Image 1 (cartoon, rainbow, N blue to C red):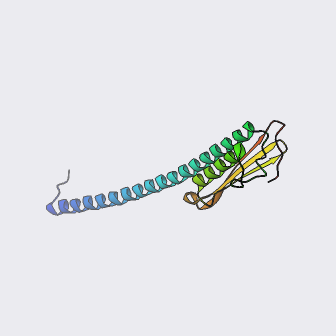
Image 2 (cartoon, rainbow, N blue to C red; image 1 turned 180 degrees about the horizontal axis):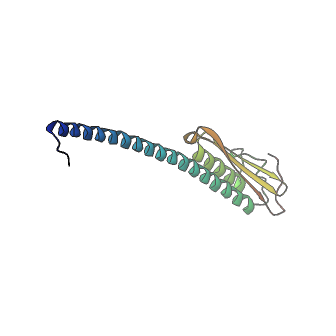
Image 3 (cartoon, helix red, strand yellow; image 1 turned 90 degrees about the vertical axis):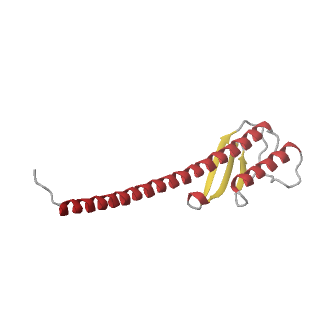
Length: 149
């Protein structure tokens, strides 16, 4: 075994300090990477939440259409002086869309014979700032009012 002089020990202490600094740099880079992954996950989680909320609103409206087969949901808009169940359903739909996606969000209902299409659009700024669309299309029983959108 070789004998180390005092100068070799001082050199060893310096190398240890450099190793600690390199380890800190590597650790900080890893932590920054982990933070970036976390932020990306939050962005996609929020976008998925918005899509889920849009599906709840669309399915709620589809259930309302099925529960009131004599009404013409496609040919009307909320706030056009409608009363009764039809007016309440359209008013609730409009309010739900605005609360969900803000003032720029849009919701539409199209009924063509037995096929109902409910579409919601919103600005998903947290997930890249692009417009997102959720569309629900379903067949309904005959006897429904036919409307054009």
